[in-house]
Length: 209
Image (cartoon, rainbow, N blue to C red; front, side):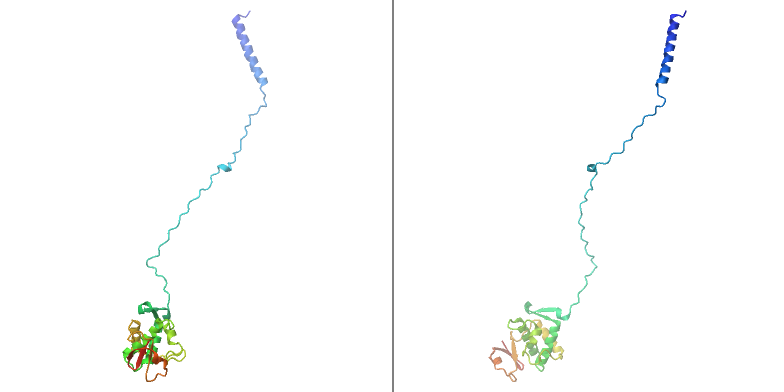
């Protein structure tokens, strides 16, 4: 007969062997490893999308022109280059000065130099007066203003003395004391001119206002 201790060992062995058989038959042989679903990456929330950051505009500083760059010069004709005279009352271009010299030459040949300046001064006094046109050319070519003028033409002849006389008149010299008229008493045919108050006599001409 088995001892009590031997019986216990036998039962323990039988129980262990039975448990192993139970596990062998009960565990499914076709079991597969569990599958795990891989979640797709979540779509980015539109609201969380970083917005573009507005970059503040910076005003470009104006580029200073180069010091050595010259602006293009504009060509100006002689008629467009005025010369200020008579305290700013009359403007005369270089071409008008030449035209006035031609009139002085035609009206004062044989007259003293002071008489030439006087004739130029009369023309400039008319330009400054509200009773006459406001340019040298218009005064010279006004109808019946000066006998050497034939319509809109005037002799091209002049000389250095006449040009110098015009320059002196332009610079403000006026031996006529502001006269607007002159005439030769030996050849004048107009009675009206004798009615004007006379200011001075220079050479063969009398000057009047």
